[in-house]
Image (cartoon, rainbow, N blue to C red; front, side):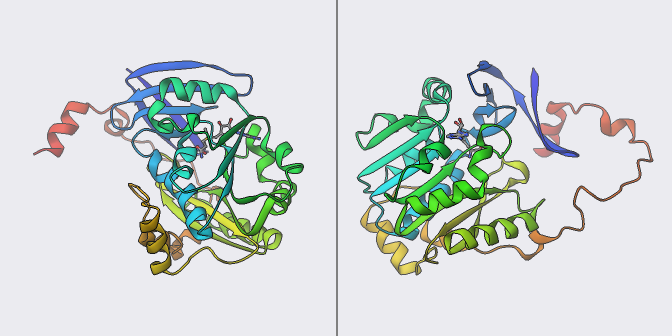
Length: 310
Ligand code: SAM
């Protein structure tokens, strides 16, 4: 059995055992790998970075979509930038929206996701409310004009084709494309490693949009298990009263596995220690001392299982 390793930080990463490889290849824009893991099910990887797994994608997709949509409360026209797997689209379409425009750079991601991960989009690509545009989200927004109630940036990391979706120019175009009371949601990164970066990103968005806040989504297969996302817009309308959220949730009969009005509120509570930067990767660590052999030997899975079940 082979092992997939993801290393987003110099001294820390994650590995997933590969039960079977379903697809491997390169599109015009990026390397794509789809494999099956015992615990997480099918896993989609772009340029070596985990995008989603069958087991935990609903947490990310529900939070990136329902937090801005429920904050807005009456979104009719929604834009998704990226999101080629269709998971965010599926969540957005649970709301009584009139139109969803999705601008995805890479047709290959959509094709591969529909083929190998059909349960992620669950028929969403066939919804008549969808207009799917293949192209660069930054270019699209540069000329889009004011037309969206909610914009969801569901992109890859700032390295590679997603890079342009993290610039001030792009954020300014998002702001211009938002209607009154509009909300944009954007993923930020790992608050455990880079708490100060989340604060800086929120301050930057606040300056450009008028108001911004960070919220958290616990996604086990994203580095460190906590993903920080941000909402921004002209008004600080991101945390409606619990009764308001519950009334909207009930009236549209929102079916979710993770998101709830209570989770919406809780997600905006930042753990104070997340901004501790005393252990950042700039500090000098002396490289002395050998690791004992019994630690580096590979672990026999059967022994681990029997030990845990005793
Ligand atoms: N949130 C997920 C993550 O970070 O793991 C992202 C999942 S989704 C598959 C990311 C999508 O963004 C990819 O399909 C990629 O092709 C698309 N993307 C990257 N840069 C883009 C751009 N400039 N315009 C539109 N889509 C873009």
